[in-house]
Length: 337
Image (cartoon, rainbow, N blue to C red):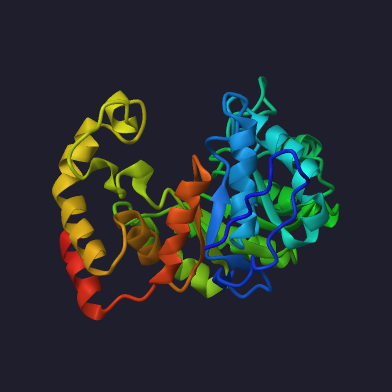
């Protein structure tokens, strides 16, 4: 696959072939088509990271036909820095392509001190999006999410804020993230009454974390809403990194997050067996894990992170084989159970 390899000093011109090989899927019953694989800027785009590496990843993504870039107010670190770096790169490279891009931001987690910098109040959501637009140098985002449910703010207020954001022209569509099925259904009803285009629910989903299958996907299907998934590789567990144990310096070795030594050891036999199936399919485990999620009709896109253009290219190769036989799915289910 050809990748744009122009000098870093020259102006960026996207590959003319960028739409030739990417798969695009409809988000629910909306008019929006998303690339089957989207780029998340949760990691590797903050002030602690190399902005040139981030620029190389974004260029590579767009050259591969990835039109959807997913951000949030608190991505970094520090908070806000991923959006600011993205804004710098956007101004240099992507401004001529704005109408070809589908850009997302979110608010819902801790962002700034005091009572108005967290959760789901109208005050927080509108102020946060105004800040995000300024950091990114954008007039609007294509979709704006409430990032997590707020147990104390009435859902009517949160959904009403999303409606106001659309009416103000600051977002074209709205979404929610990390909501359970019942709350998702209530949100869908409220947004329909407000005549607001609710097109996406962003949820964690992988072979090792299948909670969305317990009612959420059905709820989204009923309401014509697409699902965009994150953490498809279970923080790296569904890659070849841990097939032979825990390498020194790896995320699991640091035991700082979801992925720790106990998690790896308890899943080691599963991932080794899954890897055997992936090899039989002519894929890496990570590629099969992404393809397995995309088999769900309600999944519009899978969000992946990338630490380099090469890693991004490798994961996009998942699209070369999206079909599963009944036997393969039965073997995978047996392993996962």
